[in-house]
Length: 304
Ligand code: 13P
Ligand code: SF4
Image: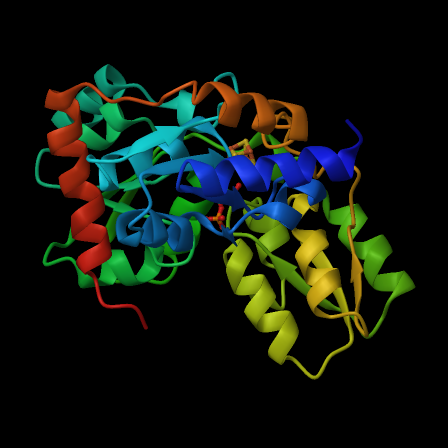
């Protein structure tokens, strides 16, 4: 089968099995092209909770599929590549978090969705890159632990009037972005707006004109009168930025902005997943109950 035939077969199987095909904004172009829904972590979580489809196929990384499984316990959630993980999520373990909680017993634990269900189960509330500041401001507490991303953590800490303790995890992809690469892109495109994801290092965020989640970048670039944008996040975002804004220019400032885990899922993997209806993502019921609560609390925070 050629690529177009594989895509057609995937869509046919998805219709036959009443499947919702979800893809994160960093997935390969051809996966985003055929997905029913593309989005950031928050948007996809909301859709996972809302869908009336029997099966969710999550083209993304493991913690995202796990979140979908937590939010839709009566549905089957499939992750085409079981080995698609997130190094940042792996930088915190339940035991490590328990130790930090002992150090700061009065702090509320705010955990980025880029974390395992077991870590979520040790937390009080979740956040994503698009609602993190809102979530922390909504808390009736003066002290918080921000886990596991140090960059998102420091970005939040600078904007809230609370004592923040930050876990030292990070995203290897976003931390590869260098100041010199932004300076070079700016010198070549002096009128460009620099949009950055809060997972970038603080010295990069200081240079940004706009800091937001991946879906926030679509909204911002589409509404902005500017025509050229330097994009400080994973390169998969370029697909929809460019197709939705054909008259605008999007520049990736660094060749390092590729998440190998997000790029694992191919059309062949997706086809096999729909043919075999596997691998299924499951969460231990005891962990799931507590972890779900942290996501539900997050989803209950009003969006601004
Ligand atoms: P978003 O929530 O902005 O989609 O980010 C998820 C992620 O993994 C960024 O690296
Ligand atoms: Fe994890 Fe970074 Fe990849 Fe996002 S881009 S999935 S944070 S490694």
